[in-house]
Length: 238
Image (cartoon, rainbow, N blue to C red):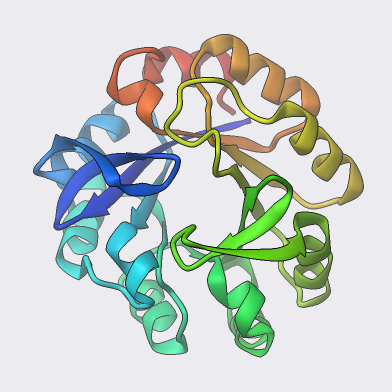
């Protein structure tokens, strides 16, 4: 299972939100590139970066912070948040971002997703951001009545071969992942699913591995010390 530390960007800083609420922000470091270097030193192979302002505004915002992370991390990163045009996706790939994480466009512009997959199939990841089983969009601000499983099937038809599942109500809460929803999703498809949201202990990582998650994205837990990233990678990485 791949253990993936997250760096959430807002106003150029490394922050965490509670349940995706932009009014409930905690700033952890003003220099995200130093955080990226720290996570790489702990053994992280892939770093998950989210442009929170981009997610809300509909286009990449934190360009300079992303470039700084790329330079400092000297390795694989994936970026999501507000990528709703080919230009933004191309900008990331051309600068060495390995994986581009799409969210809102998976609901609003399937043709764009198909085109990006055709150009670079290994680079495209779709984030299934769920609240009570239904997809949320535009930085988790807008709810839909689209079941997560339906969006997943349509994205598979579009050629997407990697998904991130986030239970929005668990994100940043330090409670636990939605194991039941994850197990149901993983059992219904044959492509990798990365788990995110609510992961707060090594025991959670063990259970995620046992239900078949291909990876786990760690956020607040590694920032507050509930999970030691190096230990997590040693025990469950690979």
